[in-house]
Image (cartoon, rainbow, N blue to C red; front, side, top):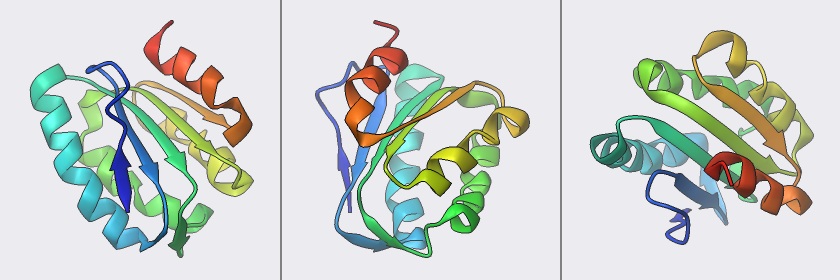
Length: 121
């Protein structure tokens, strides 16, 4: 399931993926959060902490999230993915060639650095 990280500033949409879920469940839970975030902020600054066991959520499945990326194409500003799944982290760098905005991948031990980057602090 996705846990909404409410301790971040309002202009950051932060989620922590924990437990077991499918890629489809991830997308179904994320889209309403993105819609609300855009209504309030206009642009998307997104922090994903990925510790969940998301079935089929490898580099190939992460590509499926390009659909979400394209749906909100003009809204992306910053995206930080924090995970120890190197394939997901590295694949996310391809977004910088497809979508507008800035993208960075971090290891779980670098969470504080990711938060500093996404918040601009």
